[in-house]
Image (cartoon, rainbow, N blue to C red; front, side):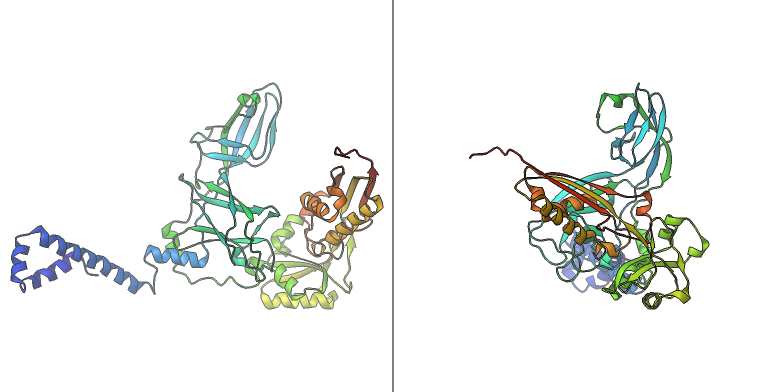
Length: 493
């Protein structure tokens, strides 16, 4: 690499060829020296870039190249929030509940979010968990909808860095999906990416191609979390409420107890440079991060009544650790022919011997082995678990109660019945919000001004952790009661 002095030396060697300028040069006339010195400096800078470019095929040297490489790999420089445990002392005369979601601040003014509600008895104490994160809600109106529509995430004005993003609209939450892996058409997913200047974007899908493309005029709500990353408040340092909700807040003392989960800062340039030394990891295969459910479901679409595929972690969450779970994939499947055995009620699933596998199960096993033959594939019996649901409605006399009841039953069985799409997957849990929205749109009588109705869904505590449960709504598990009553509607007559 040539330096500035190297170029100035070459200038001095050639300056005597121009006697008029040479005299001014040796006299150090600034009109000559400044121009030549600036040219030498620019050539030195360019020489450094040329030398770096010569090394680029072997090692990423320039920051711009490292950031471009990070963008290509899908690396987003984000922080991880620290989670702390606080000691809560209640000096008041009555019990105090510290609610989840309450904002508190430490002695340095950093915001924390209480993760779970705790109650401190009068004159007693309790322990609470809090996450160092500041949430900002941003509304974006889609203008100029296009395939893979993107929304830029603004950086924080403070010394915080991006920590989390959640996306929603009037129809509910979007699901994060890395690079649209295992994403079907019309799935409500989004992807987070950064460009070569580390500007972060939320990107949606493309209509009739992959995911969902938001239409013009749609209002997208982004909840963005910012964090200070790797911080550790001093032991016994005080915490306080960000705002006073009641007089009882004054009787509460909160102090730092311990760090439960350490935070982390965004990846530094040196770490990114180390990552850039390695070839890109191929991550566009069907089993990215061991997610086999999508590839099996796509290959056997239309031939299964129920399919649930889960890994070692999910199995041990449901039934505890076992050495036989190591490097294993678990499958519960029921074909349309119904040749597989199914258990009912609270029965524990049974591991199926390889010799007893049906044709469909053998085909699923072969498909998983073709995708990745390093896993052991275990088949277990699906367990039938009917969803208990009760709907009680009162409608005006202008509607026939029996007709309204039939509409409610038909709408719910179509959405959550044995042959519905929802019932074909594991972890099927109807949400109150979804059912309310469904019945409001499908049953006109429930939208009447004088109508009133309530919903109850019965669920056991293990429903959320047992992936083998074939959960659906049946005519026997659904109870719908509709009555009609006369109402007086104020109006002109």
